[in-house]
Image 1 (cartoon, one colour):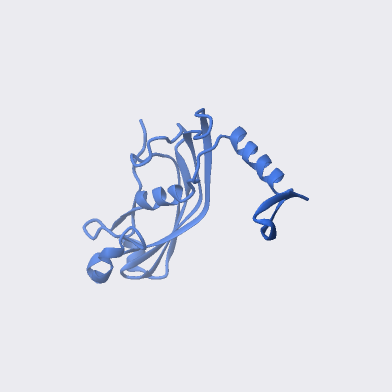
Image 2 (tube, one colour):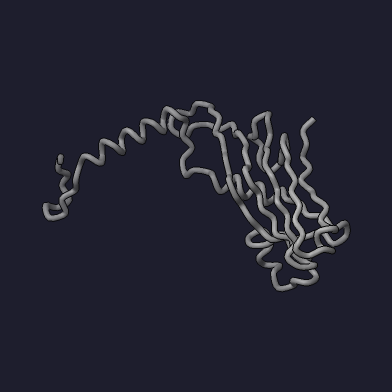
Length: 167
């Protein structure tokens, strides 16, 4: 059975501003990303309360393997994602009413009922920010890099109407 839980209790941190805690996780999944390999997501979370209403959260060493389809040759391949560092603040909504428009862009919310944070959306953002413009398998990526090396041997001469000259 897959583990989809990303909730962390932060009541003790909020009652003691300036305190830190660290949690490691592995084999976690999210329904927001359906192509996660069987090993799931792993990483570390460092939590620090900055005041009685805010927890600063740092994701470290986030790793996941995604099953992708190359957009060049259409072959299935696995893309390893590594996020060394990703940070965000979680705030109590009652004490920060001006941030409702910024939720999930700059801030995340602490659940005041059970004093928990759910880092799932933060983890998903960190992974999505690694998404390349074009998904390429290793072979197709090497082909692109070889073309770029060849292209570097040419020079465009703007004075002659943009003609390409071999250097």
